[in-house]
Image (cartoon, rainbow, N blue to C red; front, side, top):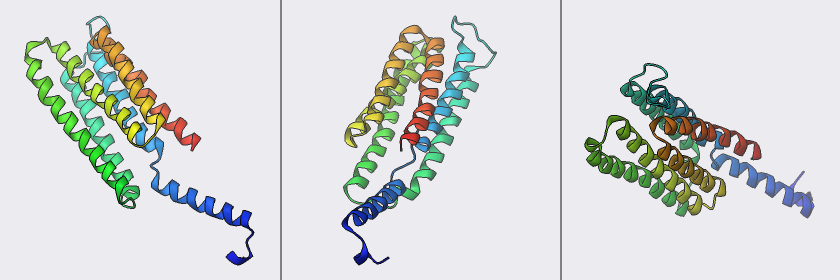
Length: 204
């Protein structure tokens, strides 16, 4: 059927279908956006919980160095996978949206680098378990703020609420101590990211 033979209603439906197809190509898959980080934090902070325990006695004899290696390795893999998965959609975006994305990406790098330098200054003054708690809580605070800022920039309420959730869980866990913080972040943030990816993907 030629376009001239289409009724206005059919033309509108065709335009909407094509627009939706373009949006699917440009919009990152929520499961890809959230699940890799969810798995990394679920496993990484789970390892820290096994190392700390809730009462200061390890649940499993895992050194904090090994737990840190597991968490760091998981985050590197999650970041590499996310970068690879988003390349296809990002190369098709130009103009103002591309500039926003670039500045937002740089914000993550600058925020994490500044956090590492600031925390590293105070770390020698604290016991080992408190050093781990300081690094984890401040880095997750940066994550929470940047997620909320990203939600505000792109008007994405799910992203904003996820950042607020990370901030709340992080604050509660920090007041309870290293073991509780690791457990709550592993289950409620790591697991929460994975669940959020699944729910948002089903919602389309």
